[in-house]
Length: 252
Image 1 (cartoon, rainbow, N blue to C red):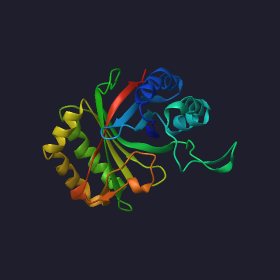
Image 2: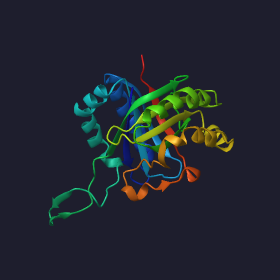
Image 3: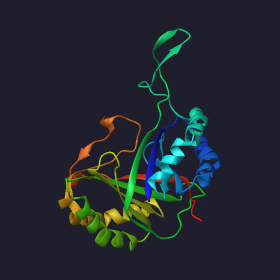
Image 4: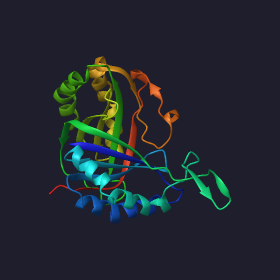
């Protein structure tokens, strides 16, 4: 399996328009794409102008074929009305001369092979904010990923799947930066995820794998620069949550 994140900055007041566009245009297009298993639009609990498209694929080849097919670019062009302009955009000319003016940047794409996976019931979100996605990032020490993967698979994955409200668990490794891994979990509700964290179980899980990390930090899914990605210690680990605005399983 392969996981792909597209990070979007949304114009103020256009969240609902983007959600309808995603449900009416993006999901059907992905349903036609060979090998796409799941698609969802995520919104952070504390940011009304950020969204993330999270998709899961049978293979990296399928994800890359979709991205290179022209369909992705077509949908991106259609969504321009909903996306915010950024001052760091491309240099482009205007009727008043050339220079750097606010422009749309291509969204940042993060790609991850899925190394460990467990999925319970099909996760479909046809109404508003029916599910909750929790993402934790770890910087893995050199040569330690296989050990991390083994312990995650044997201990943490079954413990999470036995937790009330946890529907799916994934451990993924960054394609470009192999020292970075993500734990991605899907929950019935934000309350279930918070209850799990407050119970102390999350700290116990971190303790069981922390020997494989060179540092823990919160992965901030955004279009912003590295200024928005703040390193934190294991004891100061902050977990970011995303409400599922809309999503659908595309499996046969």
